[in-house]
Image (cartoon, rainbow, N blue to C red; front, side):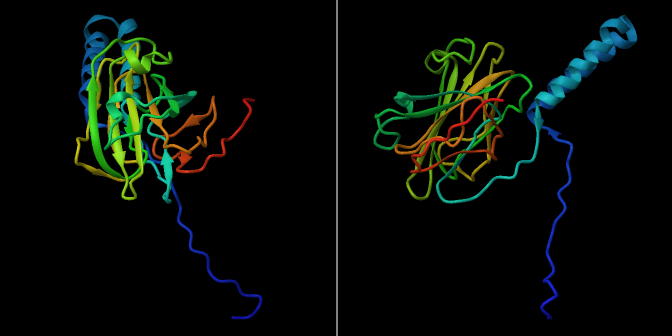
Length: 244
């Protein structure tokens, strides 16, 4: 090789793919489409065409896009798509505390609000073993309210990594959401960004950062489940930003 020659670069083209509809939502798409077709062909075009639009929205709501998850020691990725609406220091939920859970001392909680237009499939923030899955029935207040963490229907999940790192996160139902659907149980092993469940029709996910860890996201930032790095375990420097 002469000094003018350069080694070949290995590149891979990444192409956009149309997101699939998750099996959990296909029955809702079929029901919406059937109702729309009945109105369209037998009752009223004026109602049928808008109902076709509703069918497309239902399909979009249950979309399940492929995500590319970063790997690295101590990385904590977003469990949900949505808007970072709150970052607060609070005690962990009692359902996640204990000798084999989170310590009782206050930690930083990052709240991600999912609108009805966001992907609603939730993913695990770290790899490891599912230690707890605790479902609690409750109210259906606006998920954007702080008290929704304690009063709304919710489901707590605790994951413990191979290095002993424990991260808890909570799926919270909202005004429109009426069901939290889990896909994991205690004893399951998951990889970072693996699908763990969904919340139907608008909701919120809280993630509780380990002690000494500051978020790497800021208020008003949008996160992508399984891709956005929410924090790095043990890193205490908090980011600042500006909305513009």
